Image (cartoon, rainbow, N blue to C red; front, top):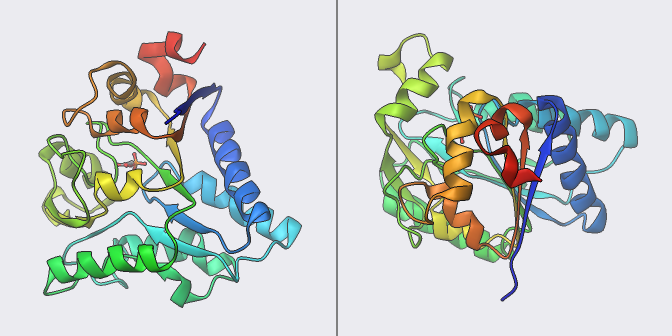
Length: 250
Ligand code: PGA
């Protein structure tokens, strides 16, 4: 199997957002029935803004697009302003013509996380798999909520968030104690089955994780390192996130 692993460093955050939104728009123009994997967090916010601007300018339709989100906090109702479901409404879904039944999330309020995880995976298979998955990276190297220690073969499941992730994400909550301690997340094997993966990272806080993902041995200590084994993955970072390993991007 050939591996196309691309590494692109752009000057600023906005350049990363423009690049990512171009890749997504290109995917939709090639196939308006695309299944997109999506991420939440601060990093993709600008990418979604760019996508919405393109949607308004070009009038491209999202009516046939299906989307799958990586993860959801466990215990948060979809209408909770801190839920990833709510995030997606605010940043993307309220602004494009995607029907709600074409959007998939793990349900954070399920009483049976194992059954919910199975249903989420089944739906991805029924939709024909993910064409392009946009992912971020945690400062500890996680992808989705696959924290360090996650195996290459793990699938969608309920996980406990690491202390690092809880403190990183506490900036978005009133206080640290409000951050959920568990989440339902797509597994590494689930993500690796996407036909294409685009990882975006911006800011100096991500530079250690990017360096580990690119240069440490591939393994559970840095879950993002597994992406080096994907047949078609691109890392797009800004100069600050490339900081510790600029040479990887030449
Ligand atoms: P962030 O999160 O974009 O808010 O930094 C990224 C992630 O944890 O995957």
